[in-house]
Length: 232
Image (cartoon, rainbow, N blue to C red; front, side, top):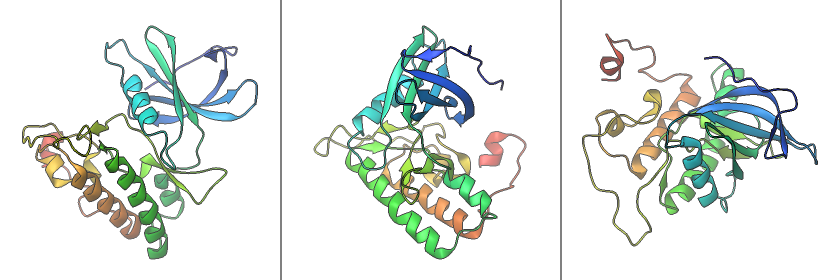
């Protein structure tokens, strides 16, 4: 789809300038931006939607709720106009998908173990805060720029609270759900329509680790008559 266009003097919240498009998230386009005063570069995710429910507004609430976590970037929401919202956040480095591609799609066992250690810690923090990510994949883990050995987790557009607190019951079992997430890394339960829980994030992380080490997963390249048959 076509990239969003902005006039040269366009500002967000009278504080940030939009410079150029640098990618896409699950809901919206991501731009390189700059703080007008400090000249610090930032990432700006912009959503264009006429829907009453704003995915970016929801995502900003998740970031705010998780803001005391280590290696979860701070983010702030701005309304541009009635149909567009912008989420301004810390600019991060390349995704693990990008680094994996640069390394001819193979990470050493040592690299996989070092990444797994940080990624498991991030998931543990989300789960302690009663949040499921539901879209664990290499694109959603980014390295820092000033701290290039640190892994950050991003893109909470599909996240869900699985309980209100550790004292309140877990979300109820349900086997009539749609597949949510990225098919390649989704858990078996996610594929067969069972309500996701913590184990599904962990299963997806296991598939990501195998992908990093082996270069691909056994089911990559499988075809079907339609999307549902392919997922089956």
